[in-house]
Length: 203
Image 1 (cartoon, rainbow, N blue to C red):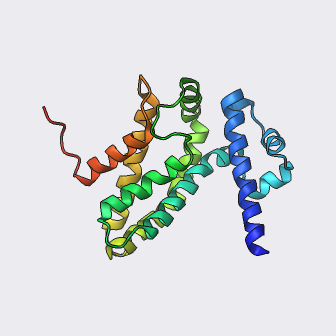
Image 2 (tube, helix red, strand yellow):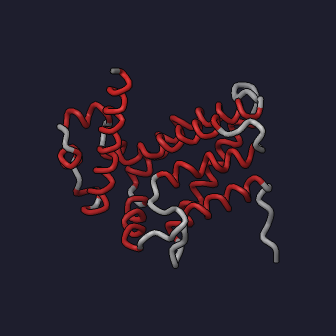
């Protein structure tokens, strides 16, 4: 019974996040209320408040889920797989899981909406808050994979911060690219460049 309850809770949370994004893209974030998101997801505003404290948190929660999915994938990768190959797959898989076709360029109207949301100061602040809240989990998984301790060793936190920043930079490039480019290959290229020490482009 507890497994079914947890699945129902996760389904409700997912429905609220999806409704928040859809409405924000359709109307603009300033025109979306918590009541609108709850109605779109088929629940009450009180139920919304059981999951999220604001519409900004509902939109930024996808980042929390991606980090935790990255941690789960990294822990599940084959032990003999080279570390940076395992981390690259772990970082990219959660992005691909929420893309209808991560190997294709996104529709221009979708990109325009995401660009608009990415420029919202309140949403950027919330994304930063949740990033700080979960990045320690990624450092812990890196520590497990590399035999290092985030409490005493710099390496796990350094890798987690660098990989997260590289993904953010790649997503920013993806949003700005004209013409649009596929996200999945861009993320892999960025993480491979990090693994190689970010060598300067050849002349």
